[in-house]
Image (cartoon, rainbow, N blue to C red; front, side, top):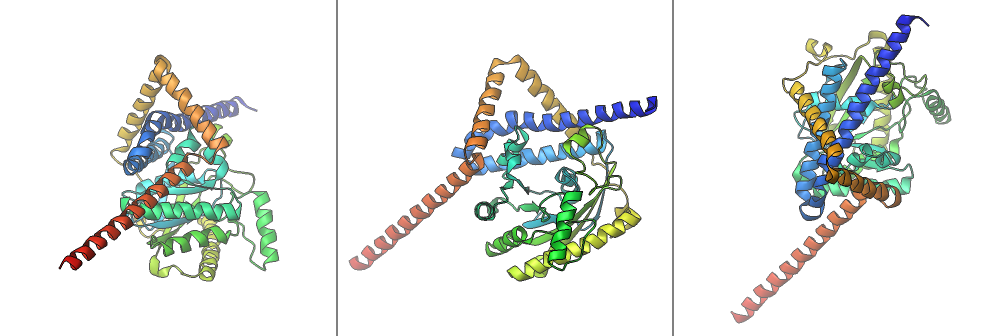
Length: 402
């Protein structure tokens, strides 16, 4: 090993550790000093609570996007359609690496004037201190890979989103493959293809259709679907399917991709099948097209752009440097407060204890939020019914008097 290679390795570790520290630190500090203080509103003013949490989440997404672009030099190339911020939508994406969701947030930031994205993730993620707790309060959807329990979870979340849809559109990001691309997952996908007489894929895994079909059909029933977005992500300098790629450990070693390409195709509601069988067949067809698209990408290193401008990396906006400075200033203030104030330290310990207990030994804060929400709806519905009955009785008495 030469001196140059050793220095490059050291530089990679420093670069990766700085990014991971800023990434995880910003989430944790944001959770304790922005998310957690809003918790009482969940009980007394839930609509405002949801609004505040969504704003904090959007601000952090902007910080993460700006951090990757401005500080760590990641280039993002977006081709295809923009995201309509007025859409209640389902977004489906391939899953070549462990951290695709982290590199998809810049696409939401740059291709949509505003958004309210909810990601479908594994149940274990919500238990991660700080990051998982913030995702819980942001109302991400956590599944246990147990169909009976997951079906109930998805139904409850869709009911929750449907009964709060007046507060603004929502976009649900789903990875139909269920796991990222590795040698092991490819082997399982190959076995599935052979068993079901399907084509073997190289760049994607055969999608698990049940979750996608259930969510899309459920949103259709609740009249809360405007479009389905087919998103394809690729990394020119990352080779997935060899081993788990772009893990947190990889990123800590400085293996941050130099470029991320994302292609987006919007399918408006009239193009979306409405039957279970139709939806299952449709998602399989989308994945066939995705495999061909990624095969072509491996040869050309780009997706088909709609305009010449889309061939170029997306430039940062005027406000992105201000976003970085603002969030770094907030982090400095938070750390200073935490280490100089006894009250802040007690707050940190108390919130940590509450969330550690609730997320590990109870159904969780999110379940509590949903229970309170549906209890309020039931109470309001009962009150309205009683008021209607009372008004009807008054009208009847007036008729008798006449």
